[in-house]
Image (cartoon, rainbow, N blue to C red; front, top):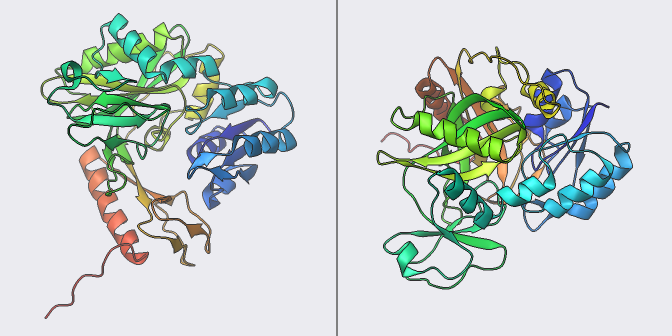
Length: 378
């Protein structure tokens, strides 16, 4: 075994590790068919509070199955719990950013202060009751500290001046397109892998839930240099290592940095493709201080979107199409609102890749009974 992988969904990490020739021990909440196929061994960890790790179960599984000293790579799902990251690191070294670094970047007050120090636009935030001076005339978002995937974000009722609940903060909502920059850093330098655009998979209960991403894209010309420099400055100021992403909201009027994700994430589906080297290999090399001089640009555009169950359902027996990832086994129970699978598409341009993704998604939803059948012709 070469390394252990831990993420709410470890499939993108496992696929990249397999592409790089590593034998991985994967821990996640789903143990989907393709995660298991890409891993030397795949372990499903107990859930807690809906879609989060049971930390005790995770640590017990890691200690039972991974030898002491086996390096660990983390994906999404632990940012809200640096203490759990520290428990993991006591026995198995983390190849990536340290729990203390994650704690700072996921502290909304610390991130706001860092952005102010670096001259990076960042939406006003507070851990207390919102004030008219800061939030007047604007929509206010309530977010979980360290939350991932967007399902934790709510828009407050107009006039709600109460403080946020524990472990949450308030942020002034900024309009625009959600864009993300993927960086490879070694603590003292960084390289831009590429940029992508993201969209929401909204429903009444989850208006800001992550829906998918497409790329590579060209950042808006008016702000591209500033955004790239801002992302690089954050990475260098914090001494970040490995693959990290920086998320922005961009409109015609300007841009805001809204989040830093100091770990591997969902855009592996967009950028872990030929002719780029396997990103897991680049991540491990960067954690050891090595960065490539140049990186090739993907020859095609890629898009990936998440399908969520719109009701409690049992996965049918039908075979999954080739363009579907995160494939649950037949007979698996999927709760309403939970991710069901990921659909992927490619094309000579981002627009064509996204159009194909829409087509594939609609066809799959119809097969799974997640869309109403079209009305019969009269």
